[in-house]
Structures are given as structure tokens and as C-alpha cells.
Image: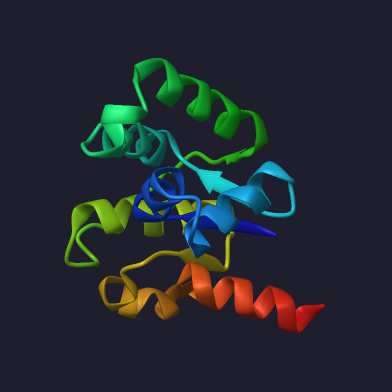
Length: 139
């Protein structure tokens, strides 16, 4: 399934192996989940992964290897339009634009409240926990 994964989920999943965000990244690694990314979202991932406290243990080489892996399994989409400003945070607009451009129907994020208006585009924002719960129910 093609989804857009917000940078807060990527950060959380790499920071701790004990949560739903980590399980989302495991689904990406097993190719059961295909992240859709744009160049702007990729750059956001690189920026976020360079922030402490993750950057203390996850150095520049680790970030590069992770992002290379992500690019190898992701659906790279080009954004030819901007909906900005649509959401309160321009970085959230970037996530929405990747979802619209790629045709993804889900955005996986920890910040549901910031994505309340995405249903106008036929997209749903859900938490990593909610996504995993749906996966279990689907089986």
C-alpha cells in the first residue's frame, strides 16, 4: 500500500525500536508498505534526522544510508502544484502535496490535528497505531 509517512514518524521509528513508528518502518523494510516521497519531503527527512537527540547516535553516514534505502523502496513523486497555504504548517503542506501527487490515500503521522482538512482531497491522516490496528483487522 502506498502511503505518505510524516517526518515525525520516521524520526520516532529510528529513535526507538519500541513503538508503532518503528513497526511502520519495519513494514517499509519488508516492502509491505510503500512510502511515497517528493524531493521536498526527502529533504525534510534529512533535516529532521539530523536533529538531536537522534543525531547523537544516528550520524551523517547513518542518515545517508537510511535515506538511500528509503529512496530504493519509495515511490518518488513529482509535485507540479502547490496547495499552500492549505494547512497551518508549510511543512505539513509538503506532506499533503506528496500524498495528492502520488495518489496516496493515507498520511501516517503523530500530528492528526494538523491534518484535519486533508479529507477534502480524499486523504485520511492516521497515527502509526491506527494503521497497525487496521492491518491486524485486515488479516
